[in-house]
Amino acid sequence: MSGGGAMRNMLFAATALSAMTWALAGGAADLMPVAPMLPARDFQVVTLPVAPVVDGDLGEWEGVAAQTIPIAPTLEQDGQNRVGQAEVALRVGVHGDRVYFAARWADDAPDEKFRPWRWREGKYQRQELRDDQFVVRFHSSGSYDACMLSPTSYQVDVWRWSAGRSNLAGLAEDQSHLISVDPVEDASEFLGPKGTTYLVKRNDAGEPFYKNTKAPATKGAEELPGIEIIGSGAGSLIDVSAKGVWRDGFWNLELSRALNTGHDDDVVLGGGQKIAGAIGVFNRSANEHKSVSGTLNFLFP
Ligand SMILES: [Ca+2]
Ligand SMILES: [Ca+2]
Figure 1 (tube, helix red, strand yellow):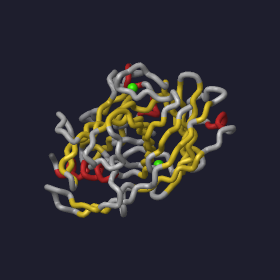
Figure 2 (cartoon, helix red, strand yellow):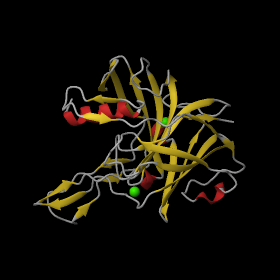
Figure 3 (tube, helix red, strand yellow):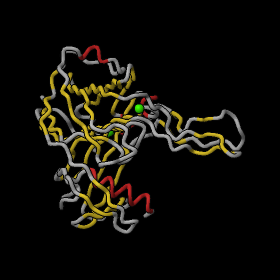
Figure 4 (cartoon, protein in one colour):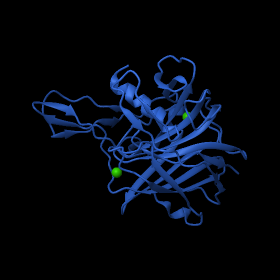
């Protein structure tokens, strides 16, 4: 495992730890100050009289009271976290056989470039620019625990909206994370006080709708996009429709998915269940450089 990978994994693990500071094992032994997690809370999902159009215009949600969800950095003193202590105005409702999310949060500028190519010193070089992102996670199996280093294994269903990638296709990427105390093939490993934990990030089954571009050898435009849409995608990967519109200092994002997709890599929502989850916001960043809510216990009608 590379040093950078080790740090990423360690920090990912750290996001689920409460007020614990620990050292990077096997690397530079940097101390990573982990911020305390926000408290868990219940989140009532409402029944919507009409289905919202997933277009980033939240006008049809006016009759639904938004709940203000505080979010906080996963790490203390994280220079790459541009969100900080903030709030998301969140509304979640069910209409028919689908669930809808409306999220609105402050962001000083829309960042819609993902690792673009720029012509530098006689060739195109990747620029480590990241786009804005919003993620939702739901507990899907196993023993969900806010602390990833507790002796449990569990899986979460992850929806990842990205301003410069999935938004171009009107989607969020439908993914899952497996957190395991037992070794898993192709997992990232991280070390905690109770031993090694394994993390696997997977895309749901199906056909991708974008890919990373390759840069030509000869000079064209000064800057070229880092990704391109290659089709509409297919399968369980594209279950989540999503559209975000940035206006007047805020992202306005709508997400929607069938309560039951019929795909075995998705959690079934609705049906009066209480399902633990969380939300996270990135501003021009990736990996651990995000601000997250505490556990949200979604109470479905
Ligand atoms: Ca931004
Ligand atoms: Ca899916």
